[in-house]
Image 1 (spheres, one colour):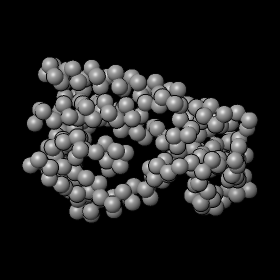
Image 2 (cartoon, rainbow, N blue to C red):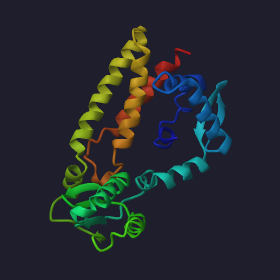
Image 3 (cartoon, rainbow, N blue to C red):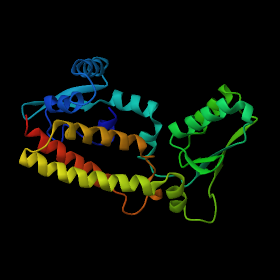
Image 4 (cartoon, one colour):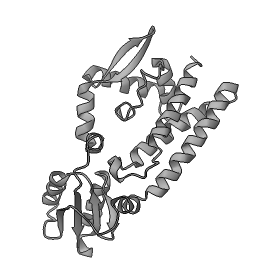
Amino acid sequence: MLLLAKGLDFWESEMSYSAQRYFLYFGRSRKSSIYTYISKLLSVGDIEKVVKKNQVHLRLTSQGSERLKHDIPLLDLSEKPWDKKWRLVTFDIPQKNYRQRDALRRKLVSLGFGQWQRSVYISPYNLNQEINQFLKHQKLFKYAVCLEAKRLSEGDDRLIARKAWQLDKLEEKYWKFIDDCVQLEEKIEDKSFEKKEITGIMERFLYLLQEDPHLPKELLPSNWPFSKVKKSFRTVLNKTNSLF
């Protein structure tokens, strides 16, 4: 569902249903578990089958899209214009409450916050309600606070984002992924690839999607390669389709 939501568009890349299953179960997942998972998503209405050029494809439904937006708020927020406001969570939790402190950090990371300073995390998105609910549940209001600001400093917002989310490292991974896709395309054409190489590209793409903070375009480097990553991956999928 995450792949479909981020614009992978299996049905537009003309990959057959069997080719999609190939990618999924030739990895670490068992074939039977993949069938079960797809069947469950179909039965509850989160995805649907469509026929295009006499082939069956999978598509995310509006219900599935709403479910993902609820579970992963960044998917929806990243598609909207930035309101030019920063949200900060700052905390000073005693060492004896280290479990709560670690839980707060994990929560912030799961919501896509970046670490700006040692005990200060930032986000361009309005996630105040989720944070305040967590602070209330963990009884952390006396140790932590969620703030909103139009500016963090006199520095450039893009430079702040680059540091807080370590975008240089992710960008390097993206360009490496693009290069590896090009090499795999050549192997597929020559039929000299191994099945684990195709599955490996799928797994790496998923990991990169989860690692990406999905920031608004106003905070990304001018040549941010995510669109090129998607294009390269789609090309691999299209070439793989010829195997079926």
